[in-house]
Length: 444
Image (cartoon, rainbow, N blue to C red; front, side):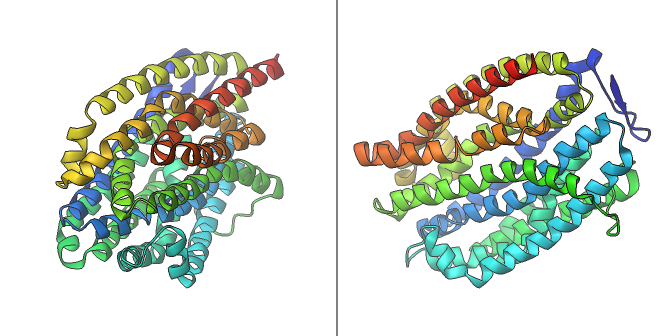
């Protein structure tokens, strides 16, 4: 069993299972690390202003990113799952149709979502937790982000689809280019333009990434296409949406949970929201590395599922669970022990650092469970198992988290808010274990 790409010479085969997994996932992780760096750079340059209201206002716009990412993942991860299975079945022309559809529909959806949220800008920002003091900063940042929504959404298409063809390195390069542009522009634009400058730097970075990835598709890809006249059959559309929507629900649920946490923290002051905004950027280090090693394997899981290699999937799954468990435990311990110096690297405000240390430790503690949840979600998505993927998408950053947050905040107040994510991660890992056992029985 193997997959060959005549231009790139890439192969997926059972004899090189683990090397193939790292060949696909390491570039995703490297791209994720670059994403972390430029997110931290944004936060660093904004924090250097010493304006806690500016920090809080920009932090409140984090759900906008998650919403746009959600719509990108509908067609990026949904298309990636279907594309991998089609390549496993040697259906190259169908794969080409799927890739063209995902590109154009993402552009259209990005424009529609950005326009709708711009029309509802101030009420939406108030819903995110903006106070009268932070609303002007959130408005500046959010307006520019929403204007660039089509670019942000479409960025996730070729970033995902190129990995299905074995070109993870180019996918990573696109992320790196966007990040470098952003980092260069941040210190030039933020001092004079504040929140708007940070957002402009971000959108220009995404534009550069999109253009680079598009050039790779046009010049090097043997499978992907952007021809607008390629028709997509209805069953393929349903397949893209069934998996893509479950992937998007994770991002939307994360946004809603962030909004809910901000609403709970608002009672304790804008400075708590500012501290949480910084903490979430630091915890992103752990989360994005786990996401990279989990979702980086989706093309391989999908290819194996399309080729009917059930035993090979089980072997790969056992390795990934062991590897991610050890990795997440190591990173959790490092971040918990180094919480204070990590926060001091980003902000000089000692009050924010003091508030942030317990937040950071609680937010990171559940990562040891989160890896198993992410990997199981990806396996279900890659195999076309929409219902289990949906259940997991609605757990860790959805129904389970919301339930835990509401109960814990009522019983334990501020400390209950901080402990909610860790508790939800543990409960979601138990659900992931139950789903894996059920899937194993089904395959027998």
